Image (cartoon, rainbow, N blue to C red):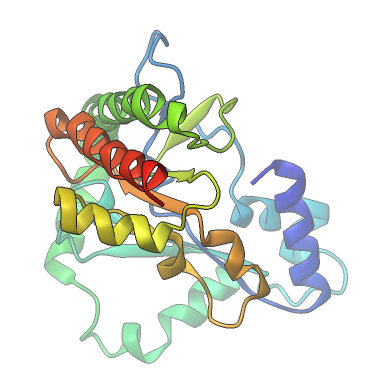
Length: 253
């Protein structure tokens, strides 16, 4: 989402007194889009988050007429940047919002927070070890996987009519890649056949749709693939298998 779009979203939330909850769990997992970059990691945010914009735009939650609660909160998780199963995360917002959240039942009861894991995370943050782990291990590792999958998609899927969104981005990240199938192929059909014929599992766009949303049709040809789960050496093979399925469907619709 562009900076201008983020600002418009915050302004809309303020106009309708709504709270934007952003799932920022992949924010620290970013790297240059081009494999030729001199560094496989990104230490600073390219764009401010929605919660940052809400904090600063036009005086933030302290602007005239505001109640100090804010209109955006950022949700984070250590499970994405330390190890799977790390049941510990955080929410970031205004001071007033943070206090209100701390007084809710899930926090105040003492039963929901993971106290022991929190002490581990505190140590990793205070010593700088978490930052080193993200920049020296996670970002370079995921970057290699991303580059491998992108190269395979460009080699095997793009010639079949598959299109990648926003190919001009300078920075990418996360765990997943999205692409669109050529018409008239449908992602539901390709996902079913990929699993049955090639033992390849992909995420068809329909499973990410919101029931009743008029834009649900836009997801019919969209596919999400994951480069963080499988071994790095298997990624290109998975894309090749998917290409074989798409080729057969195109040849025999």
